[in-house]
Length: 214
Image 1: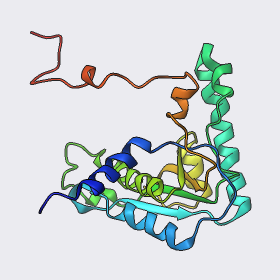
Image 2: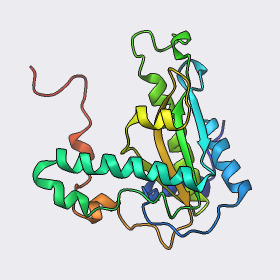
Image 3: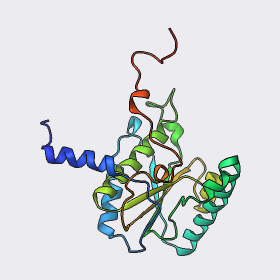
């Protein structure tokens, strides 16, 4: 297939470069057709053995959204304590926008994954990698649509699975907050807050073998 026009190529790289893990949202509703396009983008993701292990639960109930928020808050406190000397710094960070965003989705792994051994016999975690690809597709599509998306991973998976009546073997991977934003962060939020900084790419790319061993 021929190379895309340069404007299309630039748009792809722009979405990658400007994608942000958003925590601040406006309460405006998300257009249903736009949400469907985001879900379709996720469903076009690659998956090992074409197993398509992603499942998405759209949270419509205000009460249930509040329960999700309570689970996240519970784990946020436990995470802060585990960080030791950075506890107070962590507690000042905004780690989710569950109560403000227009839409909440829970991304999960399906049950019955043991049947799928193609590509997973030695790397069973590739089902999780496949769901991550679906989330990334949705993230980039959301950015192109001018919507923010925040990936929330601070929760107890067993408690969330129970809350959402997931069958045995299914597992929640992420709570996704989607919605309109006042503005996208100029840099990743944790970089803006001096929590961490992006590493030098040259330090992360090796040739032929892991460095340090002759």
